Image 1 (cartoon, one colour):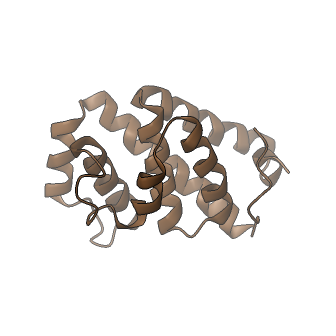
Image 2: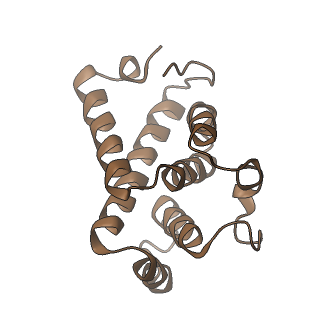
Length: 147
């Protein structure tokens, strides 16, 4: 089953286009995969985790980073400052426990990314959160992704 078969084709194409545009604008495919994997962990989306872990490996993300991603804050020396800023923003946008992104998280991300990159990073987080909700909501199991 393809991702677009899970949704109406028009909606699936729109979500796919948003995902692709956000990744292109971020300009770092390995970082993009860390972001989508972390959001998928938070959202408990097995389908997206299965899919993006494979893609991350193709983009050269290390096994150590993949192994420690769920505990990235405690994994000193495994993630650089840019990755840490992106992961913090990913969590803040995904969870929104305070109803907004905390100022310190935004300020740290703004030190690492220019305005355009920040827009694409947030777009990527929004896109994967949409996909996570579709796949979890439809109870799509892992293993069905075909590149």
